[in-house]
Length: 139
Ligand code: 5GP
Ligand code: ZN
Image (tube, rainbow, N blue to C red; front, side):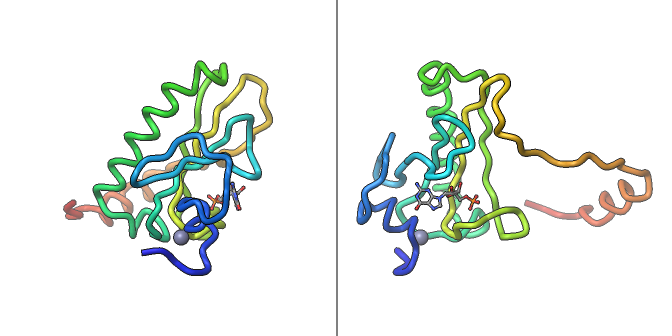
């Protein structure tokens, strides 16, 4: 399904032209319009799924395999020193476009693509509480 008012549906399906670096039956991979670094690209399925929760298993597997193949090929092309593969779900997690996508962000020593998190201490009480909460979660 495509979503009428979704910009990534239009970009992924070629209704709006975009700087495409790869395309197959399921995905378009195009350059991010606001790149964190030189070569920042997005893997975007052609069907509309809001996030990873909604993405069918088969497409989830294909997306990650595609990420692996692309960063393997692109690292020497961009002369990158490393790669971040990032995927946000929900506005609290930084998602701003609500059509599933994976960020492929080449990293260069000394670049300013600064993101990360503040480290907190994992105290014994919190650790035990979390282990208790997830006990019995079967996948
Ligand atoms: P999110 O924050 O949802 O994980 O990432 C959304 C990404 O989409 C951002 O990095 C933003 O720069 C990019 N983006 C938003 N609108 C467009 C657009 O119209 N075209 C392209 N190529 N990228 C977009
Ligand atoms: Zn969409």
